[in-house]
Image (spheres, rainbow, N blue to C red):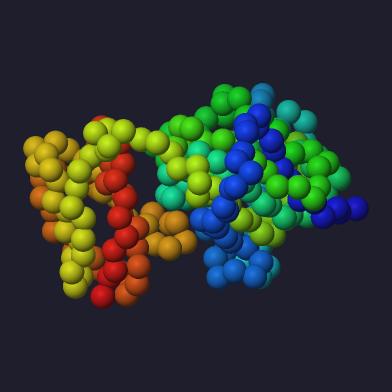
Length: 259
């Protein structure tokens, strides 16, 4: 029997009574953004059985998603699947909260959670805390003093067959708790667009940097290493995009409009 749950995690942090919450990400049911774009999948099988097989699929319903896993033999096999969401604006806030609505069968009792910078690779050896287990009707509050901008919300499939349905996700930031970053630590770039070109003018033209371009869904559509002043052609649809320029582990963000 399935149960509809709202899952949450709590970190010991004091939040201001005058917090003003701003939505910085929303996807799933009732939104134009499909959670399918953010599906992340890892397989971990120990010991490795040459006769084993696994099957994983994703279903979509009104921009919510279903994660379905089946493997044989069922012993000593684990499938980790969930949503990996990049939220550039998240890195500017120290106080955030998450709302996740999903349908979770009784066979999967726990959702796990992890946040990290977008420059960090996911490893199975990472110690992830439980996101929630049999908890409902509450927000997830967490602190973000590191300025992380990536969320990984996932299920652990160790019973076959198994499924989890992620219906709706919203992330909000407390606009009264902006991350205090030394101005000198941030790289200085003049970033703007004109016509179908992205123009980048660094204050230190000799230093290398990385350019990333994201659409409004958070999907990275361009990523290159650059040096000096750049005039990059933009062969993309008309609209607003986010540019992230990273130099020496520091990032500069800007919004541009492609005509």
